[in-house]
Amino acid sequence: MKHRGQLVVLLTCFLGALNMPALALQVIQPRLILAESHNVTLKCAYDNTRDEPLEQFRIHILKGERGANIKVCDLYFDISKNKLPNDQSCQGQPRNGSVLITFNGLNTSQSDLYICQIQKIHPPPYITSFGNGTWIFISPDRVEMKPCGQFTQTTLIILVLTAFFMLYSVLITCLHWMLKKNQEEQNNEYVNMEPPKHSSGRRRGNHIGYRT
Image 1: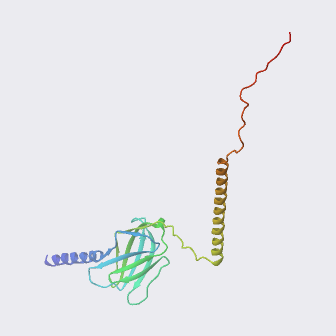
Image 2: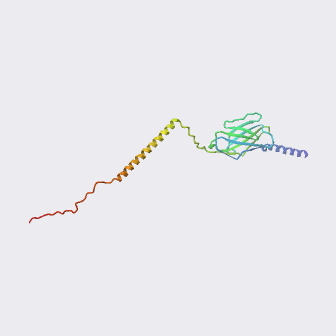
Image 3: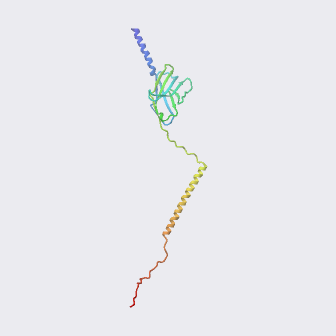
């Protein structure tokens, strides 16, 4: 009975040790990222409760809900080698307890849930852990106002001549209007100097004489 009790205790400890690795690596990532550009940086942090530094590990970035996600980034890190891994769609920069994943060329249609998956390779044991996911929203493109180029000498001459002819046309129009208005005022002030015709006074009646 004594040996059987010790065997049960050892078996319980062994099973507990098997379950510990799943809880020994916790992946932490932000809940939301609002990006105004096409380059987005996602921070995948990890908490190794065993206080063993990760020497060799792999990071996958999965896009979409759990179970229907798509792998969009795959990076392998070996801390003993000072070489940064690069993928065609992402770059990784390891930090103390985290990795910065940078995506280039994202657009609004790629706004989705991005999940960090970390696979601990060395030191053993091998552990795989997932983060809760980060919602990344890409803002639509803004219409950029392009600055005007510098005026060339030809452009400046054309602008000056255009302004001159416009001013000349305005002056001619105003002068013509003033002359026409002045002429109308003179016609209204004209006085007829011809003396009035007077009648001879009493109108003579027509007398018809008859001879008897």
